Amino acid sequence: MLTIKKILFQIENNIDAVIAEDTTLGKDLWQILLAQHYADIAMLLNKLDDDRQYALFKKLARDIAVKVFRKLPKQQQATLLVALDLDQATTLLKNMPADELTDLFDFLSDEDLEKYLKLLQSKQRNQILSLLSFNPRSAGGRMNSDVITLHKEFTVRRCVELLQRLSHTKTIMQRMYVTNKDNVLVGYVTLDKLVLSKPETHLVQITSPNELVVSVDEDQEDVANQMHHYGLLYVPVVDKYNHFLGVITADDVFEIIKEEGSEDVYKMFGLIPVDQGYFATPILRQVWQRGIWLVGLLILQSLSSIILSSYNDLIGKYTIIAVFLTMLIGTGGNAGNQSATVVIRGLTTREISRRNAYKVFLREVHIGILMSFVLAAVAFIRVYWSCHEVLSALIISFSLFLIVVTSMALGALIPIMLERFDMDPAHSAAPFLATLMDVLGVLIYCFVCSKLLG
Image (cartoon, rainbow, N blue to C red):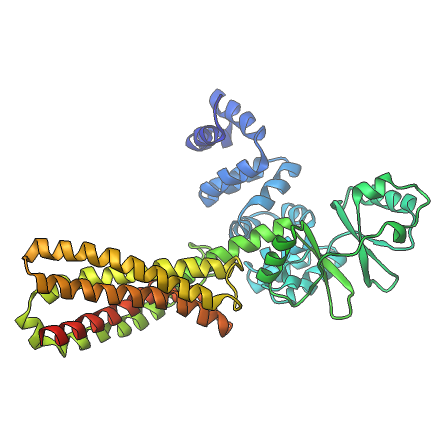
């Protein structure tokens, strides 16, 4: 049996025939494609160039096209939407939840945004404009406001009738939220409890209190962490008066974690996080985003040259200092990055907090000392094998010991301090820490050599 990857690979290799259906193979592959999950069709579309993507998408039936469109990356959605005629665009937009539309509209120009907002119904348009007013990284910017709420005085019979009537236009969630006449959140009721209760039962009798309620201004990453902590698939969003505004779902949490993870990766490697795709970001903007960090690190790295130049006479007299310099600072940088990575992950998962940060720091120093003994022993053997000088081997191994201990201590301390001052700990990882340890490594090495070799 062919796997999905092999099927899509074969379709991609014969995409022109599939689009045209001018051969037996093309017709067969088209039928095979229609039988695939819409997420797999979206994955195929994302691999095609704009012209073929547009041509293939146009061939899809309306119901399939809507599902496939929702699975495409937002940047790709925006590109495809602009290429479609207004009738097709209207169909797609009217079948998307308000929160997804809000994310999509972030990738459109002001002119296109105005054009497509006019295609929406007034209620949907008002929801979009409301969501756009919130910080996109807050609970308000992430929530889905197009959800069914139930009045606490409704009977079970009335609730079921309401859900049956609205099931064709709205998604029925496993957990539905209950409000009073002023739209103040009261609690929630699960779908199974609603179905199993007697028809004349009032909703307030079977309503459960919410384990977690988040404010509309709360940071999306904090919301995702809290939902994970409590094991929730849904969480209600309210304003400061406890008015119900929307819901954040497990799907939203998945996207939040994905976005935050990508942002941390950018920061860990000295890049400014981008809010657009790679190809959608202008080259000059990418040069600026990368260059600002590289220029700063270049200036910091130049301190190594200043330190080395002050020890020119010593290096000229003992050339072995220069031979093993890169080995020492490279090892120190690697050790520091390991320590920083462990601490950053611990801070992200909340395993490390301000309460136990001191213990973490001492633990990393302890690990650093033990690791330094091992590395120093290996370095001693390596240097002695090369030059057969005990003193040189001792000096280099001792310098390595100090560099690794310092590097691992800083690797643990810097992320903790950044978190203490409400800054992102990811900024402390490579290449910043590696550059910092290059400078400190050179300083420690040269200082030890000057004192022991004179």
